[in-house]
Length: 307
Ligand SMILES: Cc1cc2nc3c(=O)[nH]c(=O)nc-3n(C[C@H](O)[C@H](O)[C@H](O)COP(=O)(O)OP(=O)(O)OC[C@H]3O[C@@H](n4cnc5c(N)ncnc54)[C@H](O)[C@@H]3O)c2cc1C
Figure (cartoon, protein in one colour):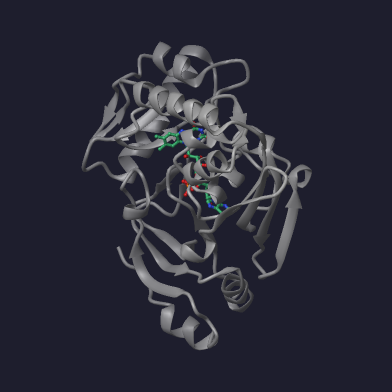
């Protein structure tokens, strides 16, 4: 599957662009599941200014999709039409600031934010150790684990909208919900300011070790997976509904419902995105039949099916 190469035409319209543009870039390698087709065009901006410039120049009819570390993502086999944006080095700074605060670029892995907080004796951010995404994904998904959620520690987030305008959202303006955020979908987050409370680095380190240990025993973290597949319905646990519907270990092709944690789907090697999505839909319909509950996807699915 390849898309029409729009790179030369776009490049000609953007003489001051500094970031990298690649046509038909395979995306599977950028996702935990390791499946899916290419991006029609992948753009890796140098910094926020470069991102703004690109978006302002990009014709309005070209769709834009942003990805982070691909830990909550299925890229469909037909790939993603338009531009996929992946933030890199220019969004990778993380530093402590006075007032038990941490400022982090949107491409900084959550675990690095947790470590920076520990180094600076800031408590309250250790839960980020348990989320294998980057800051941008944590903002969009209101990532949470072990009793903490992004919204609990966020002061403000910066972003750039589809027209290239930079914007700042304070905590309340994020309208965070369960694994969700109310900021318009076109906003690409570029930076976050977090705040914790003064803490003891040794105590924080022990908390992070506990999280690491717990994750290793309860989640298939060494597998090709996408984390929790479905949101927990109000008052229920998705994994219990999936288990009760007899779906633990269910397979479609090389896609499998994890034996260890049945709200996780796994690519055992050689699965297609369609296998994984079909497996997810099969689980949804079995749960609907056995319990009447409509599971909602937590994993984001992007792109088109193979034609
Ligand atoms: C083994 C495993 C365990 C997990 N455990 C947890 C857990 O305990 N708690 C939890 O909350 N999640 C968990 N997840 C899911 C996932 O790690 C989180 O949702 C994470 O926040 C996604 O971040 P990402 O960078 O990987 O984003 P991606 O998966 O790349 O993208 C997810 C969504 O965020 C959007 N996005 C990414 N970057 C930006 C940006 N800069 N601006 C705007 N939107 C952006 C994307 O468009 C997409 O809609 C787990 C996943 C795995 C594989």
